[in-house]
Each structure stands twice: as C-alpha cells, then as structure tokens.
Length: 154
Image 1 (cartoon, rainbow, N blue to C red):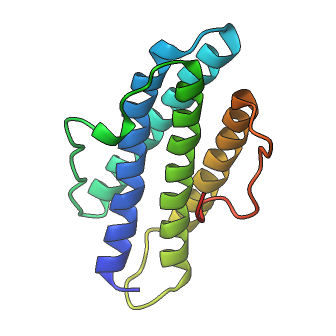
Image 2 (image 1 turned 90 degrees about the horizontal axis):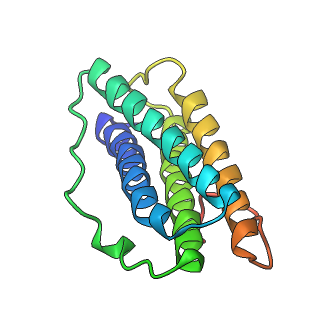
C-alpha cells in the first residue's frame, strides 16, 4: 500500500463522516416521532465523534485532515420524513463504503506502515454504519433492510 492510497482512503472516511454530520442536520428537521428523532440525534452524535477522532488520528499521523465543503448540494432537498429517512440510509451507506475502502486499502499491506489499530477501527466503523443503515431502512419501510455486502454498491 502506498502512502497515497492510505491517505486517500483515510481522507475519504473523514469526508464521509463530515457529510454524515451535515446530512443529519438536513434530515433532522423533517423527522417526527420520538424513535426517528432520537435515532437521528444518536447517529449524528456518533458521526460527530468519528469525525473528531478521525481528524485527530490523521493529524497524529502527520497528515492534514481535509476541511469539509460549505455545503453538500446533492443532499438537498429533503421534503418530508420519508425523504429524510432515505437520506439517513444514504449517509450510512456512504460511510460504510468509505470505511470499507480504508479497510481494503489497509488489508493490502505494503511498504507504508499504518497506525496500529486502524484496520480494526475501519472494520468497526463499517459495521456500525451498516447496522445504522439497517435501522433506517426498517424505519423507511424498505422491503429488504439488509444488504449482502455493506459498503459495496447500494
């Protein structure tokens, strides 16, 4: 694994977490009911914590964490609760994909030593996003709440 691939994958995970924090802010006002509102708050808090820890880990590795964009136009508009739940599914899928990318990059090994525990962190975060996506799919009433390989495709 080259340092470029590792940094790219790691920055992609950070970018997905930045988008998730922003996206839950977009989705939240359109949700109603204690279960959806509570889930959105908990999930946003989880992503905010991951954003903070991922930024810190990148900086500790001597890398500059990429700043988030000012807006994410592709996340707009959200017209109602159904669209908000679908957005939450998308946010979690995107995070799962980013963490899977980092996990795969780390699994390849190579001349650059990755920080200790980063592969476990990537796997854990992939799994957490996959679980959150299942919960949102269930809340959205999708016919299949699970996907065979979280983080790959839709």
